[in-house]
Length: 201
Image 1: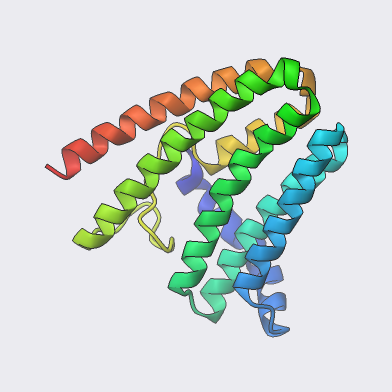
Image 2: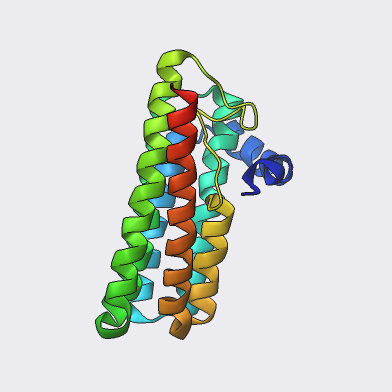
């Protein structure tokens, strides 16, 4: 919901570390893959109930997700990089609820499954819109630096990060938070369906 407003702050914060990494020859794709590996460690930490470690690893994953884009803007963005970035992001988002479900299947499995289904709704509507928009040559005015058409909504990247961190801080609240966020994702999905139905008439 507020990703577009946070973009200038994010770019300013990551500019210097991105310049340092680019100067040392670190590729954006390498950062994307390393960030995903960190995300997998976060899922393992969640399954083991290591909440502080999981929180730090999730935060590191998200920072690296911003860094890969910042480095790409310095070195020159590529279609492969844009593909890799969004593909790994969606898998990471789905795996975080899996980590909570593995930790306590009795309490967390059902809300985790519903949350993952809600993520499928937001992700599929996002990618479907982006695919058609690309074919039409459309660009998202609010996200001019994104590698694909970036369709906003009630639940975007920032809200998802806040959710995951809150779940790590209060793990017993996972079921409630999952149900609430799944409902918000449902609203986002319906709004995106409406946007696509209207925009592509």
